[in-house]
Amino acid sequence: MAVVFDRPHALCDCNLHYCPGCTHGIIHRLVAEVIDELGVEGKTVGVAPVGCSVFAYNYFNCDMIEAPHGRAPAVATGVKRACPDDVVFTYQGDGDLAAIGTAETVHAATRGENIVVIFVNNTTYGMTGGQMAPTTLPNQVTQTTPYGRDVNTAGFPIRVCEMLCTLDGVALAQRVAVDTVPHIREAKKAIKKAFQNQIDGKGFSIVEILSTCPTNWGLSPVEALDWLRENMMPYYPLGVYKDSEKGVK
Ligand SMILES: Cc1ncc(C[n+]2csc(CCOP(=O)(O)OP(=O)(O)O)c2C)c(N)n1
Ligand code: SF4
Image 1 (cartoon, rainbow, N blue to C red):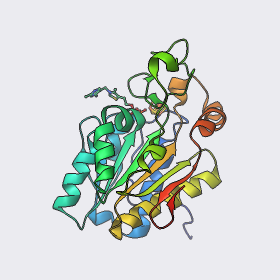
Image 2 (image 1 turned 90 degrees about the horizontal axis):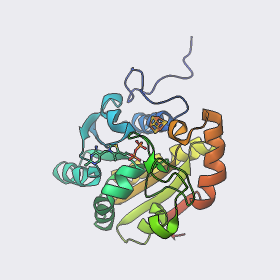
Image 3 (image 1 turned 120 degrees about the vertical axis):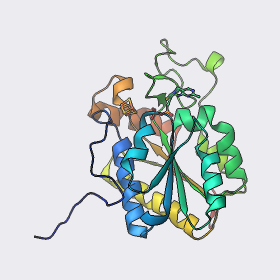
Image 4 (image 1 turned 180 degrees about the vertical axis):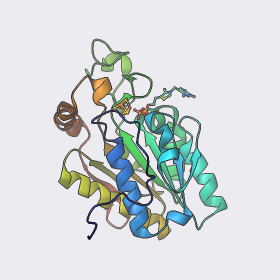
């Protein structure tokens, strides 16, 4: 019988620990499908973050390195410079990438490091219980903003793609989402383009993926997808912010 749907080879045959309705699992699958389709599993090195996706090093079949909190772009820089023929990607949450790892992210981007950054934005510190992240929306209730994020005291959320697209070293900055099948397809195309950019030596590519955290948002999986659409998408518009072939949005 013909197999029409299977686990990508680049994803290990094991159970993922993510909560029901968490979209980290979908994003893992998309990255693994791209690795399979580009035929680069044997020379791919992934860098796992601190956060819920820390166990990414158990889930991908390629070589994986665990980076200290926020330092994945620096670790990826070292790997890529030492082994330029390898295909190197980081997988990072918004607490990891846009809080403690802001400097590493901005400087790897402006240096035009030839790496792929998979940036999972769920507006919260998922693993540690739902504290405010740099991406938490204005008035969003979190463990550390029980009355909602007050921008007068906590500042405004960081729009990472909009910020990075101003840097000359960036080849691709695109924001996608994984809330619907068409969006999931678009997300995969963006991830594939980012990997292809690296193979073609084009420089730093970041794909920001709007993702859910039903557990810390206090919502069911379906409600979480609605919340993402209604609250995240207006603040974080989907689109290509920079494509070195086409310029800045
Ligand atoms: C140096 C350091 N600081 C803080 C922590 C605690 N910590 C672990 S995970 C995490 C938040 C991760 O949130 P995010 O990157 O948004 O990923 P998510 O869990 O939401 O996927 C924090 C603050 C740590 N492990 N190491
Ligand atoms: S805490 Fe949130 S981000 Fe972490 S696995 Fe659960 S739903 Fe996903």
